[in-house]
Length: 261
Ligand code: ADP
Image 1 (cartoon, helix red, strand yellow):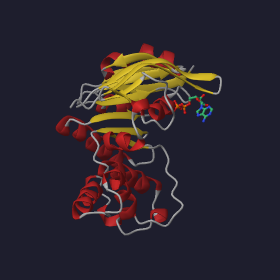
Image 2 (cartoon, helix red, strand yellow; image 1 turned 45 degrees about the horizontal axis):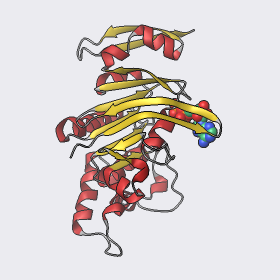
Image 3 (tube, protein in one colour; image 1 turned 90 degrees about the vertical axis):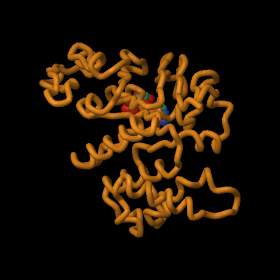
């Protein structure tokens, strides 16, 4: 079955303040789609609507052609995993226990975890290179280590759709590239549908197949990085002056911010 996410005319308000206005978007398998835009433009709110953490209106968010408002949390968790922006875990779980929580939607009743679940958890830990931390307390990790563990938990959920909210914001440049390569590998080699909020325009240009640019709760532009990340578009959305060159290696746009307007 097509593992797609479709958004049709989604509007969303906190109280009487409308922060998403008639959003339309199509997230397809095999593609990494980036959500970009200035602070407060609605990226996280959009992601939370797609993940049904916030309640979207009816007939606006479809997963595999099903209206998400008609799906149970368990049905959603079997289709889609979310890597949130920040994770606070107050209990003294080990890394392995946290990643095992990704298996919860698949463990029936009181059956407990199977050897298959343990195997999937090991694979997820290896994919984001945190196997060596598996017995450590989650509370003892650095921000970057925690970020990778939370990605491993989403991978262990074994869904074909993964939503990520700034997955590399706390990572050093090596781990930024390594996580982005992992994410693009899932999309390009295993046909996953990936939707990720990113702040770094150059990372988005390099790794996203398509980009939606948000401003004030509206999508102002959507398409491949070359079409979206033009200097005119970046200047108008972010209120800055910038230069855009072509990266000589990847041929993708490379943005050099000059100053704010
Ligand atoms: P982004 O992720 O692009 O920074 P957000 O989706 O977090 O933007 O926020 C969009 C707008 O909604 C902002 O103006 C923000 O202040 C507002 N907002 C976010 N969360 C809440 C909330 N829980 N209650 C009220 N307003 C909120």
